[in-house]
Length: 246
Ligand code: ZN
Image 1 (cartoon, rainbow, N blue to C red):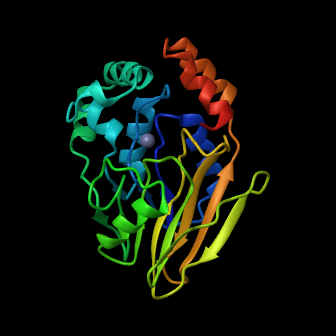
Image 2 (cartoon, rainbow, N blue to C red):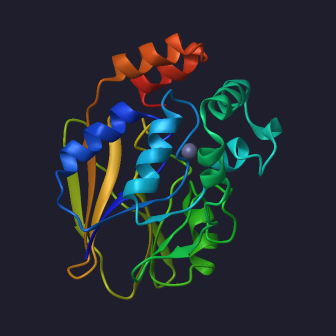
């Protein structure tokens, strides 16, 4: 089985369309590690798309805030403004869909999907130290996660925890084959708001039989997304950060 692994789409339809064109149907199922909405200007379209197309989805922290499960107070001012705006754009059915998204970890097909860390969906896994804590509570050998918006992730072989490699600037992809007797926490990167300095939309493809994993990056029309952010009256900084990949 081949999976298209998406995370942190964040209401960016231009980025998602570019990802789907790039993936070109070469997968059996789509899974999503949360944060469908927030920051960008097309939450309703992304909720509709996710409900129709994704086989397995879990909730992210932005989905929780927009659905009223969590408080706004932990968000920075731009994220707060976008969460309020997003809530007003969604129908009651769409808000209910967000509200009912399951909490990770969720078992898929020999791997789990999680939003933050295996032990806390809101925790960021952004260092080998935080990855070591996460490996200690990992249920199987492999999980895909999001939340940090940083493509790549971590492996643990015996006691050693290290970084997975990432796609270089100007390269479209990076392929690795997962080893046995090794644990993996893999971040496909963010479709809609990458923060690793590479503004291209990020995603991953994983083949369960061959244990083949490919990180991919694809350019999209950031000018259009930023113009829609301005037109919606969302904070300008949300469009500007897309150009920098931050
Ligand atoms: Zn996110």
